[in-house]
Image (cartoon, rainbow, N blue to C red; front, side, top):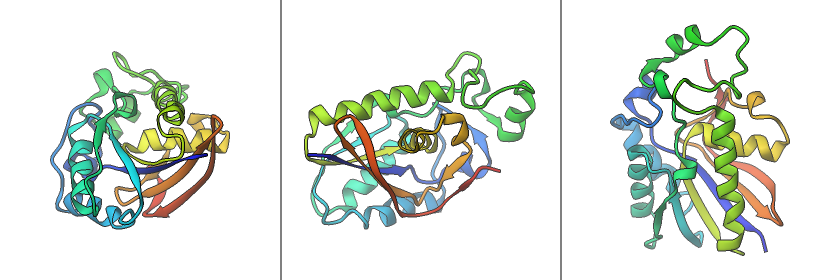
Length: 201
């Protein structure tokens, strides 16, 4: 039996609005950031979730707690380092324009290794290792991953059979909810359930 995996991004933060690459640091929610997880969770009410896996960043833990409060039963929350935000190393705290100005002219975004941190391919590989391991833990369950736009992009790119560098500029909104199935070690049946999907500026 397939594992049904729901994917959602954390609520909007002040750093998101300011277009700051905060990586493993944190930022307070905006007013919308407090409401978005509740609205997304309403699409999950009545679904038999076995577990919520959340990135250990504060913003994803806050989001997971809001989801848990909104659902009609107490779904266990487990933190998963493998679906954490990218470690942006020395670029942490820089604005997106500053990051772009510092990237080498020949940089391939998915492969570029942030000084002292990770590349987006690194993020994709650790997230995929975690997701593929869910089949052994949840043979026919439904689970929710509360994570980050780059992690979701990496999972969707794998489903589409595309390299991460072809998909990392896709922005999954803070109101996004998607679903993918894992069956026999293969991601299948991806769909967007709610929210916005567009491109980073």
